[in-house]
Length: 212
Image (cartoon, rainbow, N blue to C red; front, side):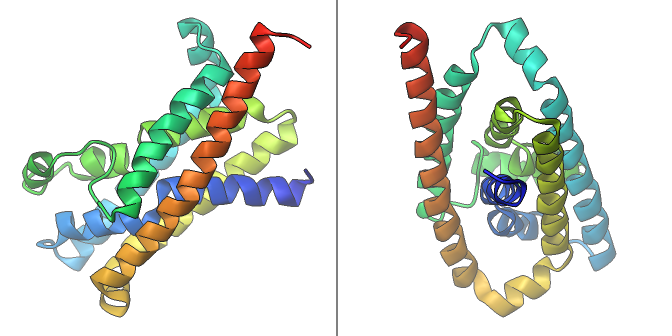
């Protein structure tokens, strides 16, 4: 795969998993009672923190795998199964992602640190995103490819920031139902990515047990 193709693949994968449109529905719910300036501050802080978390795991993923004794193929299978569950929820248009309960959502709306939890983590950078970042980084053979993953992260979270800053306008133009349609579409793409990840992991595990 050439550089352009690899960048597009990494970007689409990360964009579908972060899913700004799905995240913005929860963001609107949590910031509905805030002023525009307050909402924008939360948007900037939450996206910045989510990006930093993703970058940290990008550079420490191999260390974490080594310390825990987890193979990359095992992570692919586990991560793929997690992505399938999230994709299934997205295709059902469920907007409370990454195991956030309605009670936690209600309690979060009353706190001042909602930009940390649940927006930055786990909505924007949850287990699924972290797993995907580690898998992408560990399967990148060249420094150039890892640089492209970083650029894909920057572009993904830049789009997320713009989506959050203009969340109320987007909601007004698209409507709640329109946003749910996009959520279902992203869920379909995420399901396809997860199947590919699981298949790759299973094949790698098979080869490790039965070398050709």
